[in-house]
Image (cartoon, rainbow, N blue to C red; front, side, top):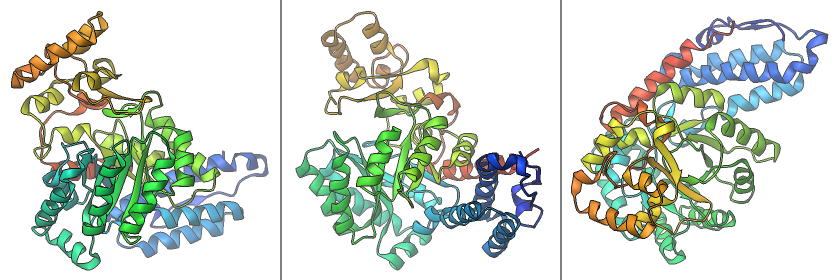
Length: 438
């Protein structure tokens, strides 16, 4: 590996980065050198967009110096391409600040107050319509009213004609219901629509085209995937603006089998690039709870991060108080949550494709199932627990509390906007602290 000097990502922008030419004996490790260098450039770009640096011209000048010092034309092209795409989420969604924090569109939990407060803090808020599309028009109308109370968001809407929030739906919903989503796009022009849960990947392409037509090419298409194969197929056929890459640590619904973000995200990035799908941004989901996880996801190649479990403990999330308390109580999520179809069977939400299940906190319903209780008896007890209110939740309760493996890192209830700002600050500090290669 060639020797090179990096004081920090900030010092990169002040000319303190001096890559030594590759010795002839080390030509084979050019790719390793490139990848390690790109990590520092990503960190610098993130810090730049967070306001740590004065201007982007300094950054571009540094890239030109780096390219001039490097003898490989391939490396130079890669470096320039990386620089071009780095800040694209902020450029596309101009009310956001960096790093971009996305509020997961949790079904009938992520509603207008939740979405707007996240966007108002510089994140990207989504409404979780799921399969409840009859109420979508009203939710978007309420969002527009709330947006008018935030000068930055209202200015964006007046300038672009777009709502600075998005919404998500389940693709397994009946086509007649999905048409209601298309009507909402045409009427309200949300900044993005998030697709998830299709029975077959071709469905994403069909509805992506409808979204683009209804949104006059301005409403962006996001698609959630959980495997490399799905990412490549969806990227090629649906050509989304954003792929939400969900690792198996995620709470709620996702693929029955898969990988964690630490391997899934970089492999997806490599695979879609190798397949020739360019310009697609990656948002990391699954296991990101606070700033350290966000920084790790950014270092792995994410353009933004998505949080669900952390936002369950926000004041704006539409959840029962007992659910919120469960999120605060639970710990050691790898041992105390599980991916299972049981909770859908108990709740009657069995429309999900066969290769999906959901991760939730272990409770008495789960333990009884493991001990051999029939689904019929378990469901009767579940229905009785639903009548008990808060008493139906908890370790000895039966009501489902979906949450990810990172639930033990959630220790307090906060406003959604404060969560966004805290994660951005923590991630930036972590990137700064990690920016020195020794």
